[in-house]
Length: 188
Image 1: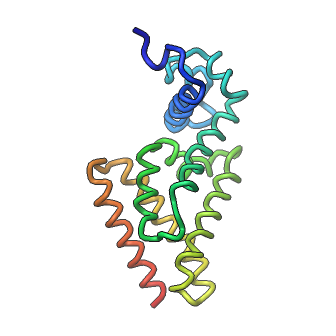
Image 2 (image 1 turned 45 degrees about the vertical axis):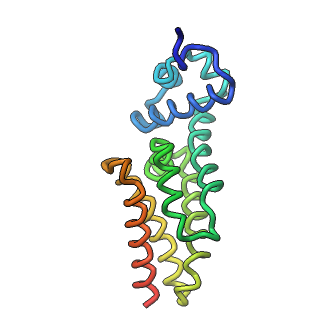
């Protein structure tokens, strides 16, 4: 019996499989060193199948970034600040390589640095809206918003690197408590 990599799959399922394989390949090799053949090999398909879904390596990398940013937009609700850290951890755990690419690597790839910076600015704007009610000074609020985003995303990447997935909930609670403590200290 053929496995999921080699048998005919619905287009959306194959697309998701290729994005996941590309996430891993790009994370391991970087953009420049990763070929479409490497992605195909990781997915267990031919290069032709990869090209049926993506016109270019650039388009594939952008789709990897989009896959995680879309999930973050859908799952993180600004009206529920107490849930934000848990939702970030969930998305990161579901797409660990794409999350790491977005936060750690894309900004170092010249072709994608602008997109990574836009994500960081949007996330800082999101944080600004949430913590603005606690921090009155505008200058403090600006750097605190960016720093809070760094704290959360870097913390999650570090957890993905070495944390036990069974303890994700406990980790999210601790990370959230740390974020609240930071905001309280900055508001002081």
